[in-house]
Length: 133
Length: 133
Image (cartoon, rainbow over all chains, first blue to last red; front, side):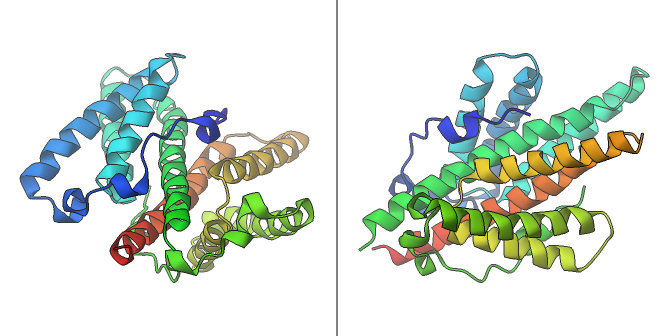
């Protein structure tokens, strides 16, 4: 496991940039579906690229966590997204008569994504603490 | 995977309770060692209890993430702690001639812990946003 990028990832947002009107709890069902579509597309790309040493993967993780952070997305939505893809992959592997073990490896992908998201919140929080008198 | 507790976990802290003087970056090496000892003890208990359906495990996860949050602990420290324990467990399993596969299951424990930690930051951040004019 190499998560060294977690601590060095560039985090372009500050906490005060967020618009509570755009928070998950304030969105319509339609808006949520639109964002979920975009987030699922990104997460699927992350999964596909993760074990291919693709340099793009860090950029996609940064994009995914940026959107999740701006939307104040509950972490359970990220976990649900991961489980949904794993179910799909397991179905496909079964159809092809292949081992499902690869799904265990993708847990590393999820760890990496939520560690980045958590680090984004942590740093944003420090900024707020500094800016709040 | 059942991470349903992530969204319902009781989060007793508010962001404004944190004391920046107690943040990880401001602690002496000795203070860090003391906290690491406490956090490692808790994390080890979480690992031991995680697949035993022990009701205590959620309480330990809440304690662990509370301390990590109050200390503003970098997420890389949590990942490092996990990897350290996994190395120890692998060594022990090798000595006993047993399969190392169990270590893959413990990735779920790490996912659960950092998902809770991330959710704690996310909720605290919303509180700050509300309290900041």
